[in-house]
Structure formats: C-alpha cells, structure tokens
Length: 432
Ligand code: NDP
Ligand code: 2IT
Image (cartoon, protein in one colour):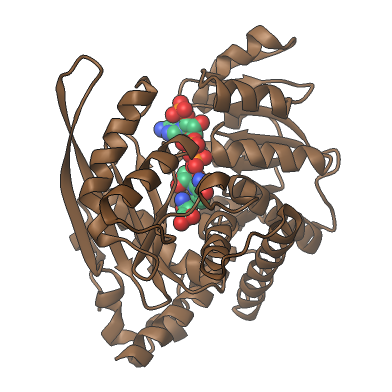
C-alpha cells in the first residue's frame, strides 16, 4: 500500500497526491492489477537541477536554482510549463508535474507530464536582466529538451517575453529550430489562440457545466476572477463576451472591486504592456475600490474563477462564497482551492471543477502548436479556437459521465481523477 506520509515534507506535492488517491474509487485503488504501478506513478522519471549564474544590470553576479521535473512520458513527450517565481521549489514542481500527467491525458493529445522553472523573480527586473537570465537558464536546460523528448511552455512569470528569449537561446545552443517550446510568439512559429487558450478554455468548460447542472449560462452573472495574469485576463475577455460581468480581480498586492464591471482592454494594457500593479486601475477608471488580495472571496458573486496560484482559496473563503450564494467555482489556476475548500463546494452542490480538467485548454493548444509545427502549417485563430472548444467539451463530458457512473454527479474531482488515473495506469501496464 502506498504510504503518502513520506511526502509530508513536500506539502504541495503531498496535497496533490492526497487529492488523487483519496478520490479514487475502491474498485480502482484496490484493484490488484494497479498495485505495482502506484509507487511508480508517484515518483518522477527524472529530476534535473542546475545553478543559473547571471549578471544583473550593475554587473553583480546572481545565482538562482533551475529545475525540470520529467514526471511521466507514458502518454507522450514530457510536456508542461516553466514557472519563474521566488517560491519555486521541488515540492511545487513535483505537484505541478504530477497534475500535468493527468491533465494532458484528459486533452486526448499525446503528451506526458513535466514541469520546471526557477526561483528567479522576473518582477522588478529590467528586460535585459530577464533576457540574460533566460539565456543562462536555457544554456543549462537545452540538452534535456526537444520536440520528441520534452517540450516546455510558460506558467507563472513566464510569458511572451521570457518564451521569446528562451527559444532564441535554445536555437543558439542546440543549433536546432524544432518545436522544443510552445507558447512561442507568432513570428517564431507560435500558434494563434495559445495566449487566450487557458482563459478561454476554463470559460468554455464553465459554460458547459452551468448548462448541464443548472440549465443556465454566463449571461448577467456576477463573476470574480482572482489574479490578473495570462489565465485571468483571457478568462475576463471571454466571460465578458459571453455576457457575464467581472466585478473583481486581483494580484499578489490587491483586489480591485468594480461593481460596473472590469474593462478587458484597460486591464490588459495595464498588466501586459505596462507591467503595473492592479491598483493602478483606480487611476484610470471611476468607481473602483482597492482591497487586500484575500478580500476577493468576500465579494458576493454568482461564479468564481480562481486563476492566480495554489491554495489561494481556503476553507473559510469557501464558506463565504457558499453563504453568498455562489453557484460555480472553476479552477483556472493549478490547485487554487485547498482540499478542504473543494470538499465544501462538492458537499454543498456548488459546481466545482479541478484545475487539471478546467485549465487544460492551455496545454491542449500547446499540443496543437506542436502539431502545426510538425506539419509546417499555420491554422487560423477560428480553427484553433474551435478545436479548443471541442477539447474542453469532451473533457467535461468524460469526467461528468465518470462522476455520474460512480454515483456522485457533483464530484468532478472523482470524475477527473478516476477517468485519467485509469487511462494512465492502463498505459503504464501496457508498457511493461
Ligand atoms: P501569470 O504570471 O501570467 O499571472 C499570475 C497571476 O497570479 C498574477 O496576477 C500574480 O500576481 C498572481 N499571483 C501569483 N502568485 C500569487 C500569490 N501568491 N497570491 C496572489 N496572487 C498571486 O501566470 P498565469 O496566468 O500563466 O498562471 C496562473 C495560474 O494558472 C497558475 O496556477 C498556473 O500554473 C496556471 N495555469 C497556467 C496556464 C498557462 O497557459 N499560462 C495553463 C494552465 C494553468 P503578481 O503579478 O502580483 O505576482
Ligand atoms: O499548467 C499548465 O498546464 C501550463 N502551464 C501549460 C503547459 C503547456 O505546456 O502549455
């Protein structure tokens, strides 16, 4: 029997394992044929760590830690983002890499699970510093990646600027221009709709779930979205297009509460072009209240999209959302709800979707970027968007059916985990 206690000193990874194994149906977790793979599925195939020594603008030497966790490639090439954030450590990257195995399986595209990154903080650094850091990071990482081996992408702190720098360095050091990274800028072979994919995808997922469970949609709904990075911004755009009113968003410093609704283009320019703090929105628009970050969950809403980071929504926040009448919580981030918060939503029949299902749109379009690069094709925005819609709809259908078949229709955690675990476990048994 698998003993999760040995992972207690890796709290994020431990939580991801507990979420998976406690949700598996007894017919799955106790099935003797899966016993031999339980240990194997919880240990990464390979963990690569390296020092990144780079020079800041004053010429001083700085050192950060670099990582790539290649978790499991039974479903295809190692695939998953790179995160640059001061909190990055192996526990966080193992949790993200583990989740990625099952998320990527749900997309139906041939991708295994991986994650990587650094404790480097791009915030407050000049463009030149970020580019120098990315260059050394890639000098160390390039021997381990490539289109048929491992294909990283972005995540927190790794956006268009970082991917451009990383890909140019990859080409320089490897002498290759294969699809070794996704989320590339369009002029370097990126896919249309990759920037929008995670935020649009979680919104498409929400729409399908709202229709199925509550025979409703986003029209006229009061929505809150935590974060204001890549996922949150394009969730804002799609929710607004579909008739929802996004009344609050956040960053790690503040929440803004805007009862009239947040304007996408104003916030996009503030965050993407000018890299400012979200509170600056108050200086541009009327009727804006600036609150502490955590107060976002106190604002009454119909639907919540946690799109910032892990464990940002705790048990007490769940109680407040439920008391305020929230009907759906759709994770755009990876594991933003604590396990206790998720349990409360499921118990109270608030529609709750785990990130590995509802935020799979980003990696799905990454998979489509690989396909386009391999075929030497460039698909239109509408074509990619249509495929994304189809993939999100298919994920919802598969996990909803599994949850229903297990006699627990509101439990999409059970639905996603049992469905994806069986898929991966069967492939692991086949490989032996
Ligand atoms: P970005 O770096 O673009 O944005 C992150 C946002 O979250 C920022 O607004 C940031 O605020 C906020 N944030 C980060 N840490 C904290 C914190 N500790 N407390 C409060 N707010 C915080 O990242 P993404 O939008 O790409 O990623 C967001 C989430 O979505 C992550 O969990 C990521 O793993 C997940 N995800 C991303 C995908 C993608 O395609 N990009 C795909 C699937 C999942 P600040 O600027 O102040 O740091
Ligand atoms: O968490 C995620 O799925 C991502 N950060 C996207 C990974 C990818 O390879 O596009």
